[in-house]
Image (spheres, rainbow, N blue to C red):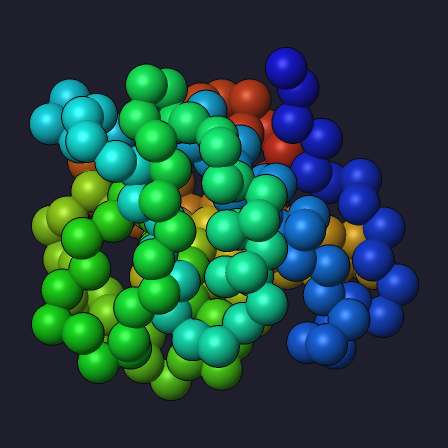
Amino acid sequence: MTLAISVFYCPGAAAQQDVNYSIHANIIYHFTKYIDWPEDRKSGNFIIGVIGDTPLFEELQASLANKKAGYQSIVIRKFSASAASYNCHILFISDEESRSLKKILAAIKGMPVLLVSETERFAQKGACINFAIVHEKLKLEINKNNIEQRDLSIASELLSLGILVK
């Protein structure tokens, strides 16, 4: 299965209300195939967390309801930006909660959590992967260092599709 991310045409997608969250949900699902978590995180449910009121939460629930990450059932959970901890595999921060990034980073420090965002330059500020619109196309900004610091590994196929940032 190939992951064609960089070819999505999103006219006017810079505006929050124009974002096609079904595409985001599909890409997030594919992260489960191209990111490797430590062995102790490969049992129980695979949890995708969402922070903030965003249509992505409902889109993830609808599109991933019966899907699995390996042998793990996928569960979608909503978290508060002020939560003390985030027990999940993937954590998405909506643009509206971007001001909480430092607190969220502190709460997941040292945890194998793939932090995904949609706010400009967040991959340089601590997120692992950031959705960005470049020349009206959806691109992924990928910070390999942030991914590796979380004890995660990323497949070269996914790296080759993104814009590497530091």
